[in-house]
Amino acid sequence: MATVPARKPAETIEERFDRLAATWRSDTRFLSSTTKMADHPAYQEIITMGEEVVPFILRELETEPDHWFKALRAITGAQPVEAADAGNVPKMAKAWLSWGREHGYQW
Image (tube, rainbow, N blue to C red; front, side, top):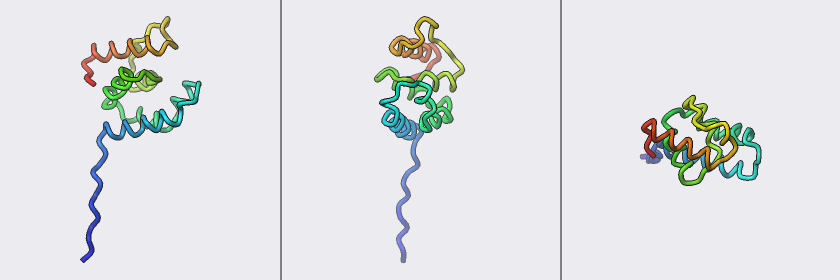
């Protein structure tokens, strides 16, 4: 009798996000264009995952600020960053983290 191979458990949303985020970071680490970073297939796939990934993106911003702002804006429709802070990654991250807390996100 043939043995049926064990099925690999389905990837959780967090595992999928972490995998895609790692791919995105690896593939874009030497890019200076935020547009090219945001156009990366892994980044675009993260956006399609929707609101469920917002806590994971906020976690990333808190531990290692990076260019997650276009994804957050695309998913949430929010723009908490002051115009004067545009381009300043630490200040942009701080604005989004504050927004996340105000809107009940936990990460």
